[in-house]
Length: 131
View (cartoon, rainbow, N blue to C red):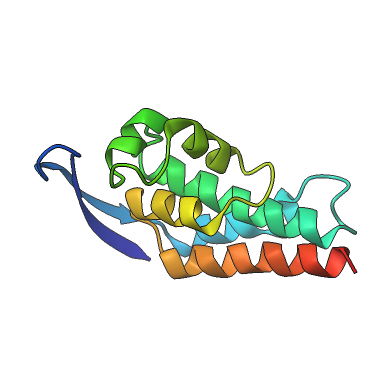
């Protein structure tokens, strides 16, 4: 999978960098495999789905150069989020809001639809768990 993304700064739309991200299928499989699910989550669909989202998000962050939350904030439209929220979203300790996750994925040049599906899976697991 390859994503080309032209990033600009907040002030005037000046290009920061032309980035061509390339994540091979092996990396994606490794980031979403069952072996990366924390111990104790095997019988917890919510924890498993959240761990898959977190692992994939961390892989995207690493592939995109592990930019700081403040640098990522500079790639997102002003007023859409904060660097603190970016940090919380990257930690993925609970299901992030779709708005913040989408902003972050776009800033890192990721596949928004892939992350939307992972995010939906976390919500579905949470709904099933609360029944």
